[in-house]
Amino acid sequence: MTLGIADAPATAKDRLDPHRLFPADTASRTLALELYQTVRDLPIVSPHGHTDPRWYAENEAFPDPAQLFIVPDHYVFRMLCSQGIDLADLGVPRADGGWTETDSRKIWRTFAENFHLFRATPSRMWLEHSLQETFGWTKRISAQTADEAYDHIADCLTRPEFRPRALFERFNIEVIATTESPLDDLKWHRRIQESGWSGRVVTAYRPDAVLDPEFEGFEANVLEFGELTGETTTTWQGYLNAHRNRRAYFKSFGATSSDHGHATARTENLSAARAEALFQKALKGVCTPEEADAFRGHMLTEMARMSLEDDLVLQIHPGSYRNHSDPIRNAFGRDKGFDIPTQTNYVDALKPLLDAVGLEKKLSVILFTLDETAYSRELAPLAGVYPVLKLGPAWWFYDSPEGMRRFRELTTETAGFYNTVGFNDDTRAFCSIPARHDVARRVDCAYLASLVTSGRLDEDEAYEVAHDLTYRLVKQAYRL
Image 1: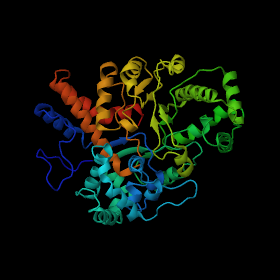
Image 2: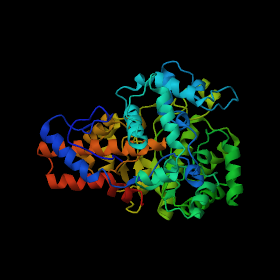
Image 3: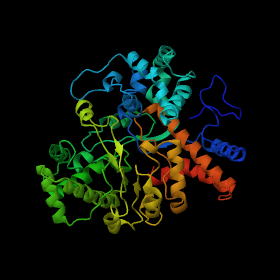
């Protein structure tokens, strides 16, 4: 987290303004800073993300600055791509066997020459926080400083204090969740468990590969699913039992949640006969798009019922048109920055699931959105009445200072603070984790200060809420 905050403006040696993201008026800014000082050093609880468990298992040095900051981070390379820079020139691995740049210094120079593209973006704030607070680099990244910055960071990465486990501890991470497919053997999580290291790294159950009929290789995946679990996954009951089996396996590696990245928030509560008929069509690869969506929707309800059995929290991440560019997907594979938000319906879409389990006090369903128009119109009213529902924080394209502020403004009046779940960073970029959490803490403290100074919240309550939003709610919501 932040190494120190002073009341004075940032010096020339400091890239980070200590008052960044706080209100402009003196009273609110002073209170925001005081609130922030009580939460800035609280442990990081990261309940949903995509860091690689292999890092923590092997604890080997990160290869170089480009492999750490650029190649794995779609926030970074999508912006560069938008200005005509080929992903191959940024070292992004290809799926088609084609050429990609392997000279990391050259990749870094391309990034540095174009660093101006990130002005006023959250990526710039995360990057500069990571460079200053983690690596002690306080100059602006540019063509002129590219090689000096590269050498400085590369030298740091050779030291033991910059290995993954040492950074995990320096970042004050109490627990971090990775996300794995049911077909993953979780060998890296096993290695972590057996290593004796005290860092807490858990997994999360992401069943899309064996749940979505439109996922590449669905039929083969389901057969492999059966081999892993010893269940006959060509039958409906065998398929459901395989999920139960695998969820239990994931729980043995610390999982407290499942995660579902569907194109829509549609749920269904179909009869067993209808569900099995759709499943058989899916296995034959003959589902229509409508039938595939109906099957995914029904499986969300089935997953909710399983959560009542095994206590896994159910996360729904809908509303992304994933892999929008066919040429990029064909060349580089999935998840290469071409995911675009779509308009999403929740009131009608969630009704079948809510009719089935919406009043269950034991169940927890966390909703995310990429459609901000739904916050005040649909999501806050739904979470403000159904016991099972909680609102996940501003996500992905809205994981930003303005997105976080809008989230609070659009949801608090209807859902309150206690139908939300704190913050999660949802990132592959390891060094950005403390930066992202720091932004969330600052934005929440700024919002709370504005409530106090406008007479809507007592000051002592603001301190309690700041702690809840930073730490308590996320542990409670994710059962960590």
